[in-house]
Length: 267
Length: 286
Ligand SMILES: Nc1ncnc2c1ncn2[C@@H]1O[C@H](COP(=O)(O)OP(=O)(O)OP(=O)(O)O)[C@@H](O)[C@H]1O
Ligand SMILES: [Mg+2]
Image 1 (cartoon, helix red, strand yellow):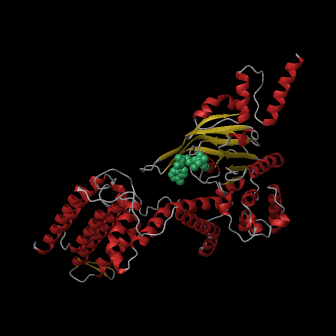
Image 2: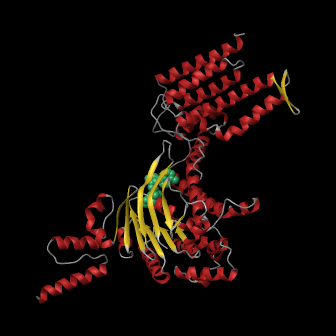
Image 3: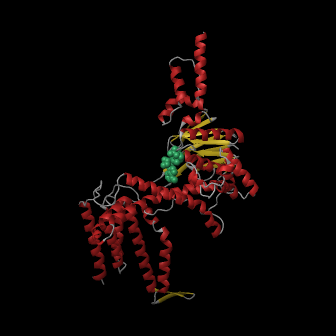
């Protein structure tokens, strides 16, 4: 029943995209998202589509996984589209009841929808092709220069790693406890809000207890292995920038320049 | 209350890259009042199978009948099935949540909307069935008990539903040898006293061989054997090849017989002792 949640789901693989250095992948993703905000003509999206097709194709991730990430955000996208269609001033082309649809509104809505869709799919591609561990590794390395101004890069990354690591465990645990209580006649699905909230008690109490137990055990296990925070820590897997990372960067720069060109130099 | 399973298939995360066939065309029938051992290597699908028997998991394909009722048909109330089929999960003590033992055991009967008197009777009776002293324990917090006691309280919580079929998933996992024997003996006497059908999941032959009527051996989601213990132990080689052994006594008897000792199969130490003594006496007399 909880299997549909795919936060940060990672699909293992051995493709050029999977094997990119996580730092590079994070930077590219941010560049991609930034580029989306520079687009001011529909034809700019041609570059985006080309870029995405190339990235998804290389990553060998089934396309429906990419679109699955859109599902939970569908409401937000639809809301944005509706707001834009009806709220933009301009040349009226149709009137339903008191709502006016304008030409500018339609264009604006299509623009926003495309931007959101590409934003989400681009970000999903990052998490689909990067294991949580290397993702946090990448973030830690990128934040490292900020250590001198007091950003606890290692601690932040460690917290993220642990949180990501425990999402599936907690989901599994929830599923298990839910089933165990259902076997004793608990009912989580029917009734009004108050009785449903009360029905959560037999689920939440054991869940919290087990979360604390796990946190305790994990802390103990880390201390037993002499974990003392980030000071002078080395890694088993050193990140290193390879030829393919430079290639990816160059392609991204070209993509970015193309978007800028479409914005400023094309009439 | 016979259990009939027909061509049960269960596939986890079907149609994704994580697809995994956990049960593959499983069919069997369990009669009323039988005591069944369900055994298999880790990951063989035991927990998956038992969760189908009270409708917690839905089959990918296949049918499950309890008392000739197809439990996955639309017009069957699952609550009703779950009351008939009690399921004790692995590490059941992790599901305890109430302030007192009494309230926790009463959780099931309360959900059934029984009268207070009936609930009290059931709680008392269930706690005694698992060998706990009702007066002593009823007002304690379940979190202040020892591991073995917690587990008993959790099992009592399921017994209080008065199931006709009781399924226990590795009830002895993580207990010391004495705690293990105590729990197993209580389950055995429960079977005798209440005449209910019991399915006991384990991956230790030793634990279940002497208790059960028949053993169902699962291997990689398929049924390997479903027969009486003594007949299954004749297949020692196959059992070993799928990561299970036979009890040490049974192995000893086999070894003895291989070397020409005229002795029958045994499944308990006591039985084996008597058989060996008989053979030795017989030899002397002859
Ligand atoms: N929720 C799930 N999602 C995906 N796969 C699962 C899930 N639960 C179990 N599996 C897989 O199905 C197979 C059977 O699991 P199951 O829990 O039934 O085994 P088991 O025989 O009970 O093992 P154990 O003795 O370790 O308890 C395993 O390979 C497991 O990885
Ligand atoms: Mg199991």
